[in-house]
Length: 270
Image 1 (cartoon, rainbow, N blue to C red):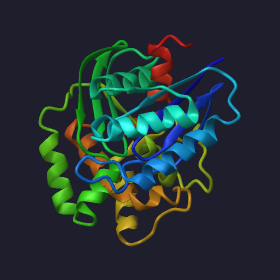
Image 2 (tube, rainbow, N blue to C red; image 1 turned 180 degrees about the vertical axis):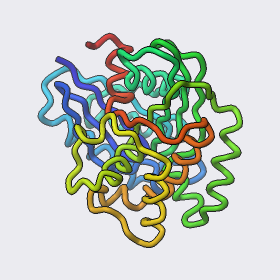
Image 3 (cartoon, rainbow, N blue to C red; image 1 turned 90 degrees about the horizontal axis):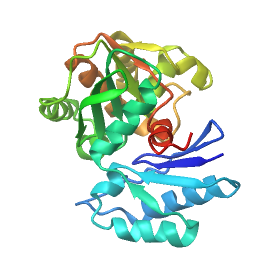
Image 4 (cartoon, rainbow, N blue to C red; image 1 turned 30 degrees about the horizontal axis):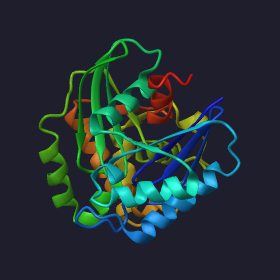
């Protein structure tokens, strides 16, 4: 048995024995000029300690955009090593896109686009029969968009659109992964409690996203959305809608399998 930890820009997630546990630590919150905030670092290290304290299996850990672009990343990596005895694999944007694609499309054939909208970046990949044709990592996510634009939705939208110019399109369908996508699937189905079995495979239409955006702009956020995610999900929803529409689809299929499973598959841990 193995365990994999994803140190993301908005949350830390553990995959152990097929089960996922998540702690929203918001590592990229307060990040300024490429410097990770001390309080955000402490929250995230605490989250890692909490997740691994009862884990007996070998642990493989990777980090994404917030750590990748941080000028003080070594301070964070050294702290995790000293307190958690973990060495962190800092993925490149290309590697992150590959892991998300592999996890989301495992066992599927055909030409598929995969969108992974995270806290600080958005990976978009196009592949066929399990092999990536092209991928990009774009500099926006639900947390960084909220930090930068707040409620200025027109400027947020213009920024996202300007970064989509070289996004790979051409898939027969699109799969979306990440907390924004899965949370919106739960909201669209009016779930009283988050249930991955209900969100996995759900077709999240642009109309579903539009309805959620309208409600959130009017201050109505479903209780199924995690309290910390509720502060950034509106900006994430706007960005996700723009990406799906740019790729030419009327909606996206939601996958609960993502870069955690992709990392395990790619590293041949399973």
